Image (cartoon, rainbow, N blue to C red):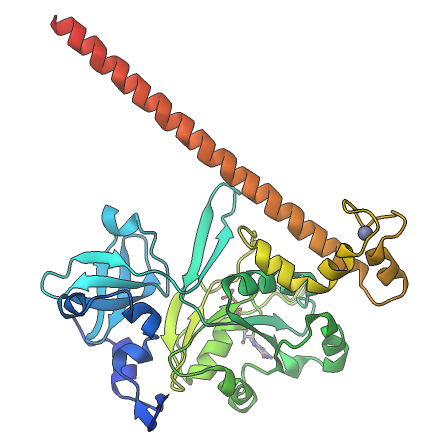
Length: 373
Ligand SMILES: Nc1nc2c(ncn2[C@@H]2O[C@H](COP(=O)(O)OP(=O)(O)OP(=O)(O)O)[C@@H](O)[C@H]2O)c(=O)[nH]1
Ligand SMILES: [Zn+2]
């Protein structure tokens, strides 16, 4: 394995300490990569001797880039590796002697979305501890989009944080901050991502050995934030279009980067469409206030439109609930149902197709057998 730039950042041992019972001790190279007891428990002592745990830092078309205690290496995406659908942040075991792939370790968390086209699920990241939802303080600021990302974050069990970027271009932050009251206790930071001092406030959220995923639409400044946080030019950044504040999709691949503070930051391309799938619990948590009101409606199948005794509509009339929030809750529920149904239909279609294929093969075998007679 070649000692890569990635590994040297860890091996040089800047700053990352993990607290032990009797004071602090230097984290091991694996801990600096995010290795935790959750993963260690999945290996026997014998396996730990024979196999090296490696973390996926990049996924390419035909290979994975991995980082481990001895440095960085790459692994071909053979059929056996690809069938595990590895994604950035995953841990896998590789035989120390042959370099062969052994298995993928169970994930502590995973992020997935409905791929464009609405037919299959796409994994975004695995083994993430916290999520930085990035939204810029301009025309891109969109509460419904933040709720979408929040549902995803809460489903995965990761801690969500909201970063409002481009503070230097916005005269009135308070106007935006006031709109965040339905999100309750979520930590919020207002930053100028180009300014090292301004991003220092995020330091307490970047804990040693923890993996953070950056989510946000194109052009909000995810790569800029990564570069400023790391103090290096790790990711390419791009201009936003002036007319609508939208980005140009500069980041093309997902990759995991170590920060000098010991955390690992996962930059992902701004997705045009973050289709939600399998986030039912996350949605309930994100809209807990409406869920609680809806339970009090007179009719158990209330659509919260104009039914008498609808507590949700009453709350809207009293000004304590936002019509937009109700509409987004309903929209995301519909989207979850539709995506779940599409996936189930696709699975049923695939099963029917493979049954048809097997029966054609059997018929052809039978025909050959009779021809021999
Ligand atoms: N003034 C100012 N400009 C910023 C800030 N953050 C990002 N930018 C600029 O916004 C543009 C887009 O930033 P990127 O970091 O490329 O955005 P991104 O979210 O990574 O975009 P994708 O890679 O397309 O997903 C660049 O020109 C940055 O210099 C900020 O806080 N203040
Ligand atoms: Zn109702």
